[in-house]
Length: 109
Image (cartoon, rainbow, N blue to C red; front, side, top):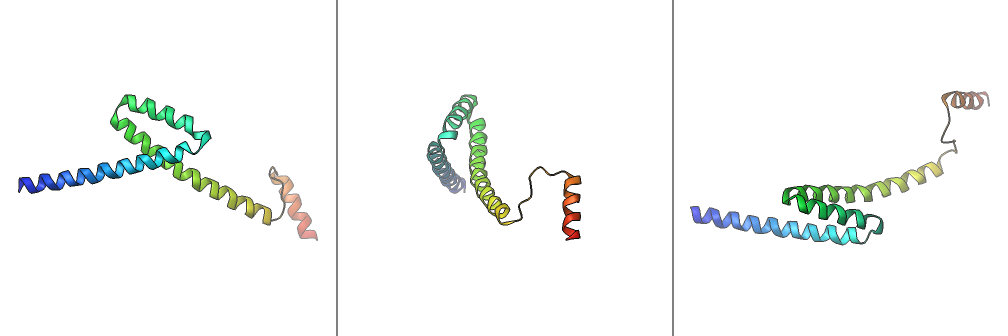
C-alpha cells in the first residue's frame, strides 16, 4: 500500500507543479504586455523571490488577483460611463441644498 500511495502523491505533485508553471507563464506573459505594470511586477517578483518560495507564492497569487480585478475594473468603468452619459446631466459635485432646489424646480414645473 505504501508504494501505491507514494505513486499517487508523486503524480499529484507533478500535476500541481505543472499547473503552477502554466499559471506563472501566463502571469509573466500578461504582465509583460502591460507597460505601466511591467516594472512594478518585476520589482515585486525579484524582491519576493529573495525572501523565499512561500512569500513568492503568495505575492504571485496576489498579483494574479490584481490582474483579474484590473480587467473587471476597466469593464465597470466603461459600463458606468455609458450609463452616466445616457442619464440626465447632473453636476458631479452637487450639495444637498442644490439638489433640493433642483427637485423643487422640477416639482413646480
